[in-house]
Length: 195
Image 1 (cartoon, helix red, strand yellow):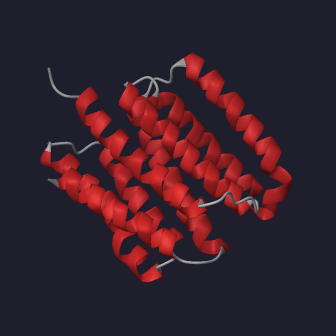
Image 2: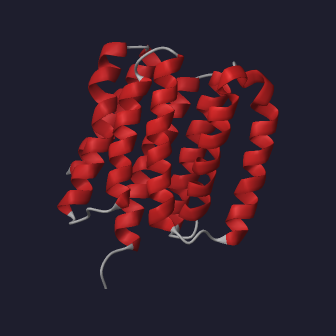
């Protein structure tokens, strides 16, 4: 039931992004994390993944506010989310760390000059994000896909901050982000189900 409600809210949010409806986005985006927290709590999960969803909710709200300060605050909250997920998913599988690390270095090298004052914060945040995606690959296929989609979503945000916005940029960001949250949450519950 909760996952169905999450899917409906996520779909409305994506349509609101496509329609550039700020009011609807303020109503729907802050619900994504709490719905998944409720899903976790109903299954007796009070762990770091649940805490990460709380950080993500705070980040979602911050990113609804325009301006660079709000963007940095949101990035800070999402950094907290990534650190929680890395800790929950440890140890990091070395082959994925190497592969994702190469992607991190390449992306930051290409975007560095375009990001201006955001270059260093993005460098730090994206390292945590990349290590989270690498760590997720060691949990299950579902969690690995969630980690990869989270990386793609935030890479799209980074491209936007650098002035590179592909068609349907906002829709792509929200679609990959909502899917990432759902896959990580449900995958984690399945992968850590008591024997």
